[in-house]
Structure formats: structure tokens, C-alpha cells
Amino acid sequence: MREDEVCKVVRYDELAILFGNRLTVKFKSPHHYDMIRAKLRLIGRFLLALESEGVEVQDFQDALRPQRFDDAIKGINAVAGLRNGKYSSPATAFSLGLLLKDATKLLITECIKKEDNQRKKNAQDFLKLLESELNASINKTVTENWSERQRQKKVILPSREDIKILITFLHKKRKRLVENLKETFSYHDWLELSKSTLVSILIFNRRRPGELERSTIDDYNGYVKIDSLTNKEIYDPLSEEGKKCAREYVRFRTRGKKGRTVPVLLDKFMNVCVDVILKGREEAGVSKTNPYIFGIPTDHKTPKYLRAYRLLKTYAEDSKAKCLSTLKSTELRKHIATTSVKLNLAEFEVENLQQFMGHADKIHKEYYRQPLVERDILNMSKLLTFAQGDRSEFHDIAANNIDQNVELPVEESSQEHTAPDSPTANISRKVYKRAWSTPEKKCVLQCFHEDIRKGVTPSANKYSRVLAENLVLHNRNITSLKAYINNLINRRDKIPERTQARRNYWTTPEKKAIRSEFSHHIQNQRYPSMTECRISIEENPDLQRRTPKKIWHIYIYMFIKWAFPHIFRVNFSQFGIFCALSHWCQTTTAPGRQFGT
Image (cartoon, rainbow, N blue to C red):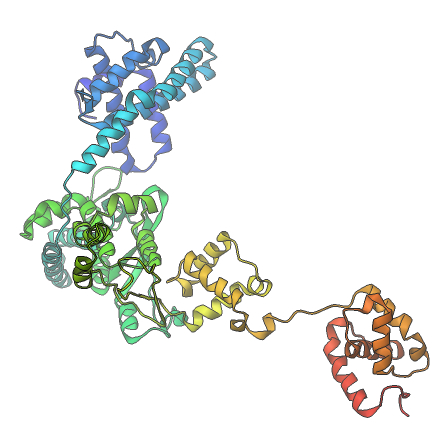
């Protein structure tokens, strides 16, 4: 923390020091140290703001009393720059409110340890005031100011031309550096190759800078690829274009925001560049204890690594792109999210993109995906014109400007259903679906065999587990998998016949009825006739659900089991054997006659 008035205020403040120590225990990674320093400086700015407002407080603890609540609100407003009902920094006001809550909870904990009941009661009352009054006093204004800023903020996304200029510049630079390093090692070339490779991977994957710059060597060593040796079931059904793509890229996974695991794709040349970087680490003087791929030498014990966001800005300037302000990591992420809207991707493809980018669904749609002005003007204007009653004008322009879906690998296509009076009813739109491959179908039938046989929809947890454990289903999501299984359940002809077989087991009352009705036949070793079987069904309620043929079959089974108990050790699960045997008896011995006569 730099030496200034803010640092002097918090340096010897007991609660501020305890708060900082607690944060260092919770956040152990070195990249969190900047965040901890920022929170401590925010405490110092808050105390200086109270002093400037004429509030005399001894320390941070003294400010967290119910009597000081109104003064605390004034301090938050002063730090966040409240002017004419608007904050110059809404995020600071919101963060400071949360910080005061956390600090008050910590103070309560310390009071409990010291058995200081009076100070604990004051802190609890102050916390209640924060929870009840902060939303009305601070957070409502923060939300309104933030929404207004987002609405008035003009977001300019990077153009594909500028992105291509930057990518070409970096590719040429990396190619030259790799050739130089293969001839002779130079620390300058090695460092420049590390920088340019980091930025190239960031632009291609549209990852957050911190995710890539903190990727570890262990993460990289666990990379996987698709080929005939490692993933034969996935590789073989692919088309030639798909196999070419599979040979070109590898994937490793690293830690993303909030502990999420996010993928990183590398093409062949990026893979070569990373290998060259790792090979030259020892000559470059990078410590063996430095776990990062893009680690750099340092005299400190804490490992250091390259900072991607600074390098991206530097290379954007060196590449002589036209609009430098748009070539930033967040704008690049917004660009790919917005491009997916223009392509009219299917829902499952949007979900795949969200998972790859490490976005929550709401954040992806509300923050990264920008509204398209061409869609609002060209498409919505048609619907509004139609609603005004000008039907002819709508039909004149609809066919020329309506969005066209991007064709995907298809097996079958379906026509979207529109209402007869809908303005788009006369416009043909095709929805393309990805065909289920044979390995995918086999995997689904194997994993959900019992659910399909019973006609029961599996749980969401089972869907997620099966998708995670089976690489062959990597192109599917829960929605498509659920739809496919529901179709199998509804159309039983798609299921192998063995999964449809349902045995109608004989109950104990039915067995007793058979013994009672045909005991005379068993003693005399005679077959019952079909007429006798029909009569037994009519007279005995327990046999109503059986046919005469079934009665005759079970009689044969019971007789053989009684006559030859040591030879035929069978049960009802082997009923098919005796059906065949009874068929042989029928063809050799007429009903009503004795065996062997």
C-alpha cells in the first residue's frame, strides 16, 4: 500500500487490521492481494470522509455504533461522490455498504471472544440498521444511477477487420520468434514469444485475462485432443472436415471466475509456441516453483506472471489497428456473444457458447450480448408497420430483409409453425437439427435403458452426470438429451424389443388354483383338454386373466417339476423352456391322453 493519508489512517487501526487479516486467510492466491489492498484503502477513505464531515471518531470500531449510523451514511455518500442525487461512483457506494456489513459482523465475532456484551449489542444494532436502511438510503440510488449509465453508455464493438489485423500481426511475430529461438536462445525473444502467445490465445478464446495469465503448467499438461487413438468413438463418425478440425486443435481446462472450470483451445502453432516457452524457462531464469505457463523471473518469493490486459493494449497499438479503444478483452467477449445473435444459433448452441465462455445465463444475455440496432430497425419496424394496418407494405419488405437461419449439419428439417394471422406466416423458415450419431444413440440406450423400459423420465441430476461422464455426448445438452429420450419413450418402436418385454408372473393364488383344479390329472398322469382348461378359467376367479393355452403350459411345467424334481431344477423364469417342451408334447400326444400311450 502506497504511503499517503489513507495508509496512515488504517495502519494502526485494530479493526481494519483484523479485517485485512481475515481477508488474507480467506483469499490466499497472490492475485487477490490487490483486492485486499483496495478494501483496506476504502476503509481509510471512509474514515477520512467522516473527518471531513466534522464527525469525530476514535477509530473504525467507533464508527460502527447505532448513534453513528446517519454519519456513516454521510461518509458513504462523500466517498462515492453524491451530487444532486447521483453518485459519481455508484460501485464504490455499493461496495462500501457491503464492506461495513462484513466489518460489523467481524466486530461482533471479536466482541463474543472478548465477552464484551455492551459493544456486541451496539454492533448488532448497527448491523440491523444497515440491513433495514441501506437499501433505501444507498442501494436504490446506486441501482438507478448504474442503469442510467448503462443505458447512456455507447458500446462500440471491435470490427472483424481490426481483429484480423491484430491476429495477423501477432502470428507473424510469433513465427519469427520461434524460428529465432530454435537457432539460438535469447531472453528477449523468449519473453516476446511469451507475451505474443498469451495475447494470441486470449483473442482466439475470448477468455478473461486473469484466466489465461494464471493458467498453470499442470493445466496445460492435461490437454486432450480428438484422434483415432485417444477418442476413436468420437473421431471415426466425423466427416472429413470434422476430422481436419479435430487434428488442428487441442483443449486444456483452467480455473475460471468463481471457481468455474473453463476450456482453452489451442491450434497447432499455438501448441508449438507454448512448448517452446516451457522449454526455455530454465534458461530464462524462471524459478521451478513458479507454476504458471507465462511465469517470468522475479527476485521475490511470490511467483510473477505476465499481465494480459496490458499486453493486449500494447500490441493493439503496435498492430496499427483503426479503432484501438475497442480491442479490449471485455469488448472482445461482447463481440462473440453479439455475433452469436446475428447467426441465429439454436438454443443448445447458445448454451454451449455460454459454458465455453464461463458465463452465467443471465450475465451472458444481459451484459455481454449487446442489442442489435439492425434487428430493431429492420425487423421490428416491419411488425410495427403491420400492426398499423399497412399489410401490403409489410409484405413488400419482409421477404428481402428477414433474418435467415444459418444452416447446420442436418438429418431432418421441420417447418416452424406460425399463427395464420401472423405477419410472418407466409415466410418459410427452416429449423435445422443435428443428427444423432450411432455412438450417441448406443450411449443413450446403455445409460438410460431402465428409464426407457419403464417409461420414466430421468432426473436432471442423472442427465448432468451422464453428459459429464460420456465424451461421446459432448455436443449435446440436457434439453436435447431430454427431448430424445422422451421421443424414445413415446415411440416404443425405437427401442430394442428386449427392452419392451414384460413378464406376467404367476401369483401364488393362481398356482394353488392350478393344483386344485388339475390334481386328478396329475395323479393319473394325464393331460387336461383345452375344454377343461376353459372351464377351469370360468369357474375359478383367480384364473380369469389367463388363457386356456397358458393354463395348459403351466400344467406341463408343474407336472414335470413334480414327476422329475431331481432332473429339472427350474423356476418360472425358465418358462420359455417349458413352452417349447409343451409344444412338443402337443404335437406328440393329444390332450386327454396318458403320457407314453
